[in-house]
Image (cartoon, rainbow, N blue to C red; front, top):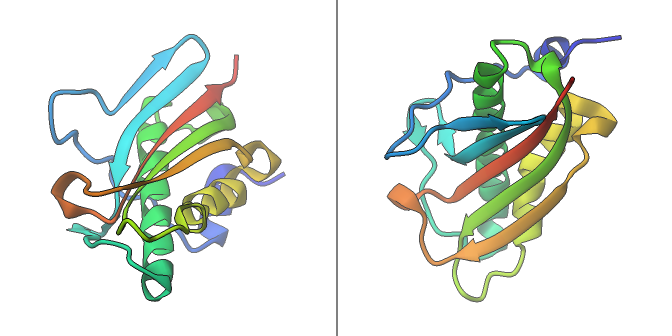
Length: 154
């Protein structure tokens, strides 16, 4: 049986440092057996992934941004779990927000970038419920923001 860290390595993925909150909130909170991760914005290294999704030409970049949000979510989860992602029993929910034009309708396809990462990392336990919505703007002009809820092991 492979560990989550093994799966991340096999994907050629390193988790970034858990980002510091940009305002007056906590990045994560444990309540009972649930771990709530605050909205994480899309970054590539130190650079934010900015822009408005307006059509198919932006779709792959937006999927990449959603995956980057997923990596930030996992970084926060790892911090919340004291460095041990094995404490996560399953991904419960992903909430996705896409900075898009009013005629863009492929929000679900964008958020697949985050969802597929969770399934690659957690296998069957990575399958989750999800919301994917369009927004007229997001903080700092980022293209995608996502939050998450995880179930922790007893």
